[in-house]
Image: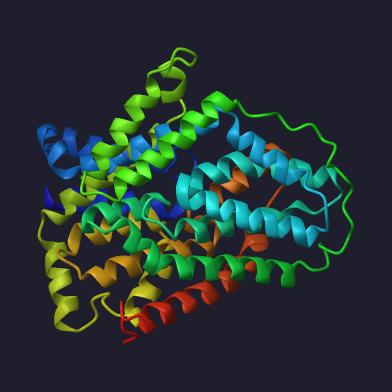
Length: 410
């Protein structure tokens, strides 16, 4: 059975790296689920052990956050924001700045994948209609979503996972990671403006008259109140997963919106991917080989407790198997890591996601959603800006972590 577990583990994470299997239309979630089914079917793990491997509090927290985000979508808030951005008057550079600031700050509170999903198609269509090249704006959107989400413990799935695993304080996380996240947002803007300056010189057509659908103020008010209550609860000792569930349950009680409409907006595929990756990595960890590998790393002084190890590790893993699977894998084999390393992992794994399109789900979402609006953002287009954005922002984060004493350079 050991060989079967090793084979399933290897194929699953190769699937995370490539995102598909040649000749088939199976995605990362499908690959991970197939791996779990194989482990169950051949008796490598028992069905009743599924709950032992899965980090249920993290999944419940993610689910609760998705319900809150669904409330914003139900209110039309995302469509309103995207429309306002696409129709904003002024120069292309000003529009780019608005995209970076708005997408970055919203991602810090409402999760980067949701913001990327909502804004990308409207931004692509709006900039095209105004005679502008949509590509720099889409790259800035993806980069800002990743950079902004690095600032809070609820900004993206990997931060949520790390925060739950290490019990990181909500406000301390912001104090440590927000300065580096803001610097990364500035770097996103500066790099895109410099590299795409030829495409950002034309005066856009005025679209300030474009009709932007008004949000439902009642539903929007509920969404804002829910977010405020949730953040307030996160600052207390009340468990975050329970806090998210309580707020989510309150939002489902409505006379105007059916609960199934809110629940239908939850990204069930992402939750299933998490559960399956927890199970596959848990089965692998139970073999003892991962522990032996960590012992070897420890004996040779190359655990990711310093920036010269952590930064390249996050860059490599994040742009091969993607940042969420990378974090799940590391946390499954690295027990009792120092607190500073957890802040560094959250920050660096998120910023590393800007390197290539495959580095983060937000990048992939922007590319796929832009394609629905008839705009193609190619691998080279993204890498042209993504690589310098990542290297500069990770360097700034490493220096910040060193200067504040949370992680030594070597």
